Every structure is written in structure tokens, then in C-alpha cells.
Amino acid sequence: MPEKLGRLTGWGRTAPTIARVLEHPDRAELATAVRAADARGVIPRGLGRSYGDAAQNAGGLVVDMTAFNQIHSVDTETGIVTVDAGVSLDKLMREMLPHGLWIPVLPGTRQVTVGGAIAADIHGKNHHVEGSFCNHVLAIELLTADGEIRTVTPDGPGADLFWATAGGMGLTGVVLRATVQLKSVESAYFLVDTERTKDLDDLMSRLMDNDDQYTYSVAWFDSASTGAKMGRAVLTRGWSAKLDDLPAKLRSAPLKFNAPQLATVPPVFPSGLLNKLTVSAFNEVWYRKAPKERRGEVQNITQFFHPLDIVGDWNRVYGPRGFLQYQYVVPYGAEDTVRKSMEMISASGAVSFLNVLKRFGAGNAAPLSFPSPGWTLAVDIPITDRLAPLLDKLDQLVLEAGGRLYLAKDSRLTPDAFRSMYPRLAEWQKVRDAVDPRGVFNSDLSRRLML
Image 1 (cartoon, rainbow, N blue to C red):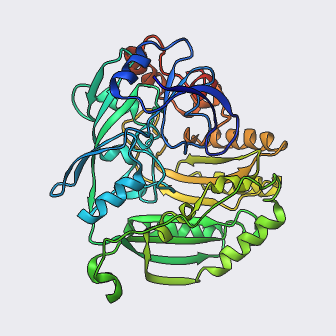
Image 2: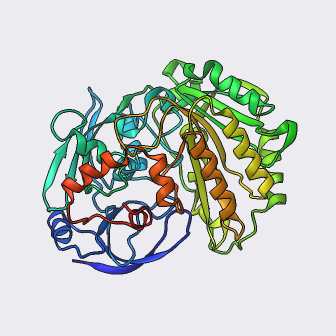
């Protein structure tokens, strides 16, 4: 089987480790590799968009799943599609839109595999009304530690393994295929309302007032401003546009989607390029360029969902030391926690230009799924020598509020903090231990968190 040594990181480019990488295996080769796994174990890897160490396995085996990239069946009447785990959301979107079908949950990039979407139980701008990705998965083909393939569904026999796999970060087995329920749409466009809010109280008030009227909702906030301007934001919310909503020039090809990558960031940026001065200037421009209020603007997929996908390898802008995305959720009623976290980040001198605040709706049955009802905040912060104390204080703030961090973004959480944040961990471990008693599936993340 074709193996090579590879130096792997997450999207944040932190904590690189060396592993054997199995490339382009077929199903039989993959099953053989799983059965023959040594003590360091195996972990599947898609497009490497987890920010931390979830798809790394120092000294062990990492399986590159991107060769499993076929769409096997599509029922255009019901919207049910069966795909390989290595199919990217970008490919699935491009091939399904001509049929009037749309992926039910999208994160901030299309460059995520279906297997990765299941492993992280990804969420998007519509969690407050439509939940996370695995809410829309009807069945999973899972290669387990004994080399056998099981089909598990969200209900009935095997449901516990399905939900342990949802958000289980690849530690219950290798997702080979998935059957997903897509949505019907009339166009590849969106009707978007944009509002500029003056501060955090104004932003939260608007979100709580009428957010459920919108399918998609997200706020970018200014992380650099303090005092009366703290938390000022650009709030964008919308729905899928119907054919009648489109201007005449778009109605002839309403389902057309074309989003070329316009540039790739070269690996030449030094650490420190993103500093208080440059980020403050960016935040000011980004806030001022947004309209104070605009209703019903027609936007395409890239404008509304994935502006960063226009630029390849944009993570290089943070320099060779990389960055982390700190994302938490805290319950409704913990608004002071959101405020305090913003104050702490600003006062620390940490800088972030990608700052997001959203609302989550109800969680699902997965013990390790991240979303739960409440506020979720995410910031991208460059790695510096002074960052660790801030993050430890933020962890404690989130814990005291009954919140938790997102494993797909994490790269430094401690085992004790993780156990406090995920009270259903023992339930997940019971299922995992039953299906993988030898501990075949392992990753840098699982060892760090002592899973």
C-alpha cells in the first residue's frame, strides 16, 4: 500500500507532527490497514480544515480520504444523495445545484469533506433554525476497528454508534459513505438584509428580537474597539432567493454557480503582520464600508457564505507560527460572559480580524456535538508567546458559564477542562470502547485530551 511520511498540521498551522500517510487506498487496503494498526493507531483525514490536531497522528497512520470522492446516487425528487466520505462540500454543491438541490448545512468554507462534516458535526449560519450537519444525515457506512463495514442510522439499531460518530472526531471508525437529505432551492442566490449595529447590546437585542425569521444569520463584530463602541457589528441575515426574487439578468440561469479561486497566498508573510495597528485599521474599514441598513439585496454563494474561499491558503497570512480559532458556546442568559470575553481579548492586546457571533438552536443526540442553545463566539488569533494566559482565563470564564469549546477548532484544551465542558463524555466512551476495544482509532487530539 502506498505510504509516505508526512508533516501534518491543522488549518491553524500549529503543532506539526510526523505520521505515515496512506494515500489512495481502496476499501480492501483500508480495511487491512485498520486491522494491522499498531499501538499509535489510525485516524482518517479529509481536506485538513480542522484548525487544530484532530486529523494528525504523530508516529501513527493517517488515511488520506480524498480519493474516496464519488457521488453514487441522487434522487432529484426526494433530494436524497449518497456520496463517498471524501467528496468535498464544494464538489457536492456544484453537482447538486443544477438539480435544484442545496446542502442543508454549510460552514465558513466549502473545502470540507462530507466525512469531516460528520466527524465535526459542523454547523453554519442556520443552526438556530435547522441544526447541525448530522441532523440531515440519514445513514453512514462506517469501517470499524475490526475491519468490518457497518451501516448505522440515527434511529433504530446502531443509533448509539451513529450519534457517537457524529461529532466524534473520527475516533469511532472511518466514515466511507453517507446518505444525506438535501434541500430544494430555486436559485443559487440569497436575499440578504444587512444592518450596522452600534455596540454589543444593540447587536444582541436585534438577534434576540427577530432572528428566527431568517434562515441564515451571522454577525461580524469589531474586536478592537472598546468602551461605547465595543461589540459594534455588521449583521447579515437572509434566505434562499426564489426565482421571482432575482433580477431579470439572473433569471435565465438561476442555479449557475461559478466561484473561481482568484489568488493563492504565498508562504512569505512574517509573524506579527497582523498586529493592533493593522487589525484596528481593517476593523474600521470593514465596519464603515457596510451599509447602515440595506434590505433584500441579492447576493451569490461566495458573497454570503464563503468570501475567504476566493483566496487559497489564506491561513498563511498569519505567518509561520500560525493561529488558532477560539470558539465557544455559552447558554442564553450568559450574555455577560460574551461581554467579558470581548473585554478580555481587547485588553490583552490579542488581535483578530475574523470575529463572529451567532445564535445556536437546540442541539442533537450526539454526546460530543458542539452546538447547544446559546451564543457562539469565534475569533482568529495569531500565536504569540503571551497568548496562553489569556486562553486559560477564557476557558475558565466559559466553564463558569456552563459553556464549551469546539473540538474542530481546538488545539490546546486540557483534559480536565474538556471533561467539564462535555458532561456526556462517559456515554460517548462507552460506545467507542464497545466498537473499538483495542483503541485503534487515535489522533493527536485524542491523546492530548486523554480519550
